[in-house]
Image (cartoon, rainbow, N blue to C red; front, side, top):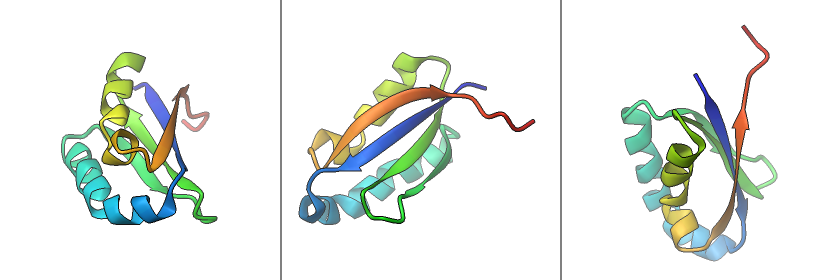
Length: 87
């Protein structure tokens, strides 16, 4: 399985707070679809991380870039292919 790490850096905390339920609902739909391996906020409140399960970078980018926090600009997106060393 290929995993893609989406690093979501906070840009606008007030806007992000207003979008939080929409952001969480979007991610829950992808969890229910089996497209997310893990997710969670950074403890310093600077943003969060989502690990997407996808067949390609393009597929992962399509999912990550539709997150309301990205679409509406409360966070920025950095997407990288990630491989666990744990077996």
